[in-house]
Image (cartoon, rainbow, N blue to C red; front, top):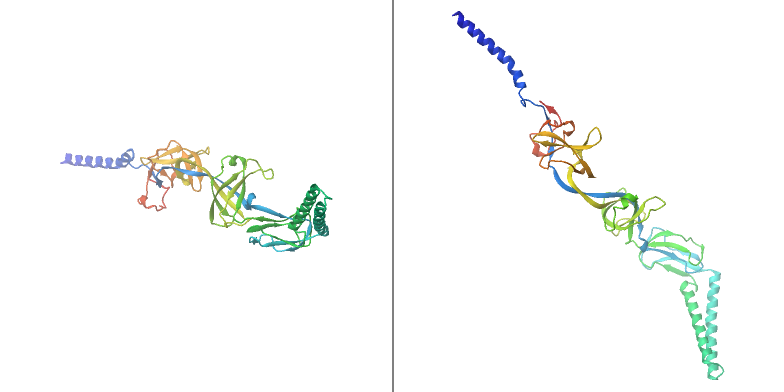
Length: 364
């Protein structure tokens, strides 16, 4: 009877020792309760992003669509019918010129010269019938009359005969006014500048390094400063010299008719090409202590750090290249605290697209 009690006590003690040792033994078992980080992932995909150049400029008339109205003769400005910035129809009056005394005198002399030449021709023809003049003299008289008529016609066309109203040669915008009321102008003096409203361009400038990538025909997106609406255009001209005033290469971008006004400031984004690689959200790119970029992938639910090269960035997306595993998901939220080999886990609603407030937290 005593022996059985001893055995029973030994059995109880052995069981107690075994139970006290069990937790430590389980903890030592590999992978039994390893730490993990809750993360969100996205599929790694190949693609391309456009290479762009963004710059600013102002709307101007295309040089081929500009016209400077000049004084056809020495005169005074008798009236002005338009103002700078005004749009005028074809044939609309612009301003009136009144010949000055010198021009009026020249016109009177031309009228007198034509009359004298006509009378001289008539007398010479009479003398020819009387055999007192030669055919050559008649020919000379005819030429003198022709020259006098041409001179008079030219003065009339210039407006020397009296007040002349200059009119718009086409539908145009008055971009500048040089003349003032009652001012005296000489022949050839600029009076005002016109521009065709359907031939406006966006004049911008880029640094020489960027200009080398731009070519005629490249697509462009234009947005007026302070506005949200965008317009499509394309490069019409890529300059081949540097403007000494600002150190930039001039670029001209086409504009849709009526989109912007002359002098208006706008930004343009020119697409010069594209770069292919892995397209990833910008949030996936991290930097190590040396400033080198890297991403983290989930390979068999373990973190794998992969150093990459950023080839291009547009908006919130980057194109990267490196020794990536195309089949392994890319870790987004929670990637900043991961190291190689750390276990990761996904939210229970991983496919819902919702954001888990616990993402990025480690758990044992």
